Image 1 (tube, one colour):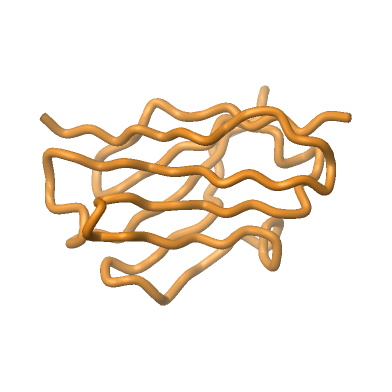
Image 2 (tube, rainbow, N blue to C red):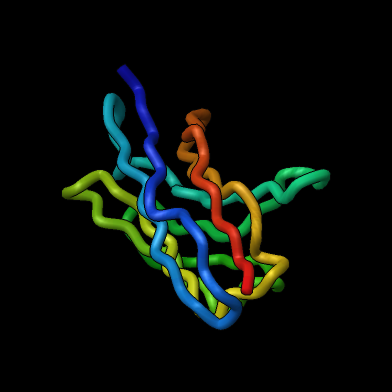
Length: 112
C-alpha cells in the first residue's frame, strides 16, 4: 500500500523554526524526485522545494530560498523540510509529493 505521511507541523512564532518529515512506504521512494508544496487558506497549492532522487539538485521557491532546506534519507524512505526564520506568510498546509503520490498534509501556523 502506497503511503506518504507528513509530520512535524505545528505552531511557531515568527522567526522560529520547524522540521517537517515525509515518510514513504509501498513504492521505491529513492527512484523519484521528492517535492514539498503548500496551500494557504484561500490560495492555490504552490511549489516549495524539490530534491533529486539521489539527493542534490535542490530547487526552491523564491519565497523560501535561504530559509528552507529540503533533504532526504533514502534508506529511511523519508524526505525532510527544515524551515527557519518562519514568517506569517509561511502559514499553510504542507504537502509531500513523490511521483503521483501525495500525503495528507501537515499544518504549519506561524503566529505571535
